[in-house]
Image 1 (cartoon, one colour):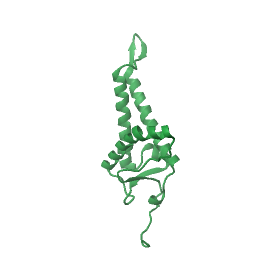
Image 2: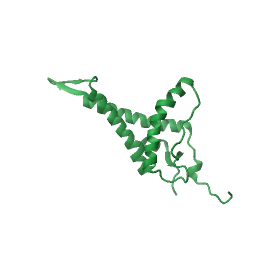
Image 3: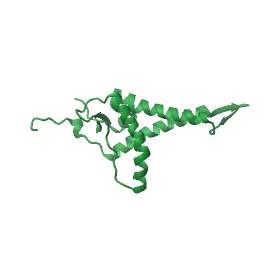
Image 4: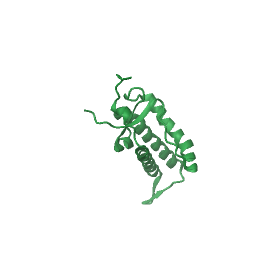
Length: 151
């Protein structure tokens, strides 16, 4: 154990505030993109008057599709290339493999992305209803750490 070196990335645990801020930025980006796509799909021009028809299934389908699409792009594809989603980049965080601090793999990021929806649907309401101190867990052998400047 004396010869085992500690990497800066493994020692740099982020605060809960940073994690929540990053998740909020990511969620708001997906939500705004979804709402914009839904509004665009629901616009109809009748006799020179622009109308928004929110009751149309097309609006909600476009909104949901765009929100999920941006979420996948942000949490999986951007993270594969930069090790961080938009929210994590802005808050100085990154995602690494738990085992060695290396770059996360594509399929593990998909698992992490899907687990995020499960967490949002199951644990967030329980946490809000009970005012508990439950913190989001790292899953699929991926860990969130503060970004450490490379020398």
